[in-house]
Length: 177
Image (cartoon, rainbow, N blue to C red; front, side, top):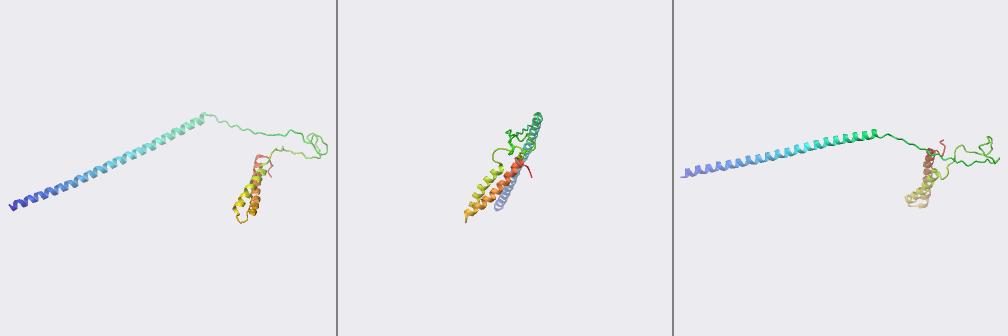
């Protein structure tokens, strides 16, 4: 009877071992299936991204083509206007009191260009630069605000004048050197 029991135990051990081996195989199969599913999802994502890029390229090409046809369809109109102010009031010379344009030799001064009315950009720049420079100088120099304001005003006024004068030259108010 003991021999019979011993053989029965051996059978049970092998059955138990097989079931453990079967469990390992099944687990590995499930892991393999999960990995295959992950790969399939990754493939679909890559295909989606590729299609999305292709669609955006096609869409941008369509937009470029539409813009090119719209530009080609519209005629390009360039309009430039130039306003010239002329002072038609007569100038009198200091010696004869007659119109300076009718006499070739008058001792008074006449201007060859028309003088524009209003404040020049150089004057505006000087004022703005002086005020701004004085404020900045007073803020920067905390020990002696008065001296800082004077120095800042001088530097700001000079800078504003230089910028305004350049704008006047560009506008034609002042003749270039």
